[in-house]
Length: 451
Ligand code: ADP
Image (cartoon, rainbow, N blue to C red; front, side, top):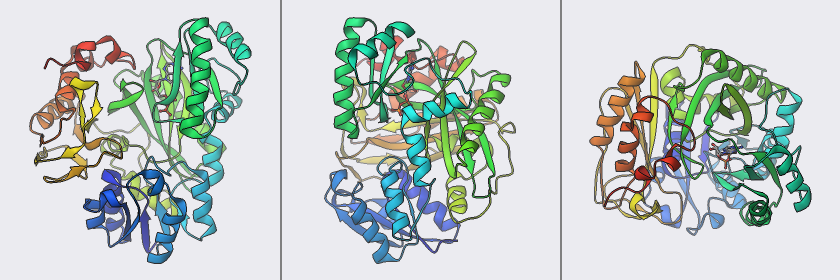
């Protein structure tokens, strides 16, 4: 087992990884930017290193600074968390070149699955359904338009290197398509340094359902059931749950088998997620995320598996210790992402100092956060303040717990999405489990609360 793990991240996920290391008896190193000097991950780690000024490209994305921090502190492994360098194959290579274990899949697996177009091709080769679309990236606008017309509008243009809901444009007709195509390529180049895009049929009312996978170095690979992440705003997830309230058992089985087949094919190592869209009884492979996800706690609640500890164990060469299989889940879990954003101002990020803070508690309630009273939310990073995760014996019990948890969550000093989340979980369609990724677009009242 590792002696010392450096966490190349900040915020709640850095704390989450520190806790897992502590339980395993591993020392920890925090890295931080000048904006995060007062952060809890710095306080809780055994060692800490400042890696640069506030902007992430000068700190959390600076590979040489992070490798140097690991070398100086004697860390023998690096956990990348999610975001930042988590899906950067060059970073996984840099770790290997310095004899530091990257806690995640191999660089080659990241390359294979990180490019959405190549992941799509692999799925097709394995007879896993994909959304109808271009066979690979398309460069020529006329060629792309011909493909769009063949599959039928609306279509979505997606960056091959995309992530986090960025680099996607929807077009409803040929004129809009020609405009969107150029913009999407420029956006992709600016955001990801890679202009490649591909075209896909835009599904009208899909659910977003993803399968959590875990593999070890001995060829064991299992899935831990699904998460339903259909409550999204601008392609970004806001509420996630497990199991999905809208998935027939027979489809769940086939989706799980497809995900395991794809991951086994590349001998996938560590934690990963395959994302699918599900509509009218059919599911379609969308992409694979080769890292731990923000919403991993809902799976932990229904499986009793500690996904982060398992990541660390398999990276250290141990076999999977999970005994529970995907079809043996316990109860129901829901996660709400509480962001420092102002719903009355189009969800604009709202950094500032938290003047009062009281998290919810009680049976089946978990809060993953890095926030405390007096903490200042810096403007440089994402606006996630806390994840409220509840578990109940039934979905009904989980919903009641979420309701009381959000009611008793006090955050003052910055606007938060708590009131918005409350109205979503009380909406009759959400209560009935009948939502899809376009639900919030159809309910502008939820997005623009009365002032
Ligand atoms: P990212 O990697 O940026 O998260 P994804 O490929 O996972 O991008 O897509 C994010 C979201 O965008 C999906 O959950 C879904 O809501 C929407 N989306 C993506 N592709 C399609 C599609 N073909 N039809 C409809 N919605 C889509």
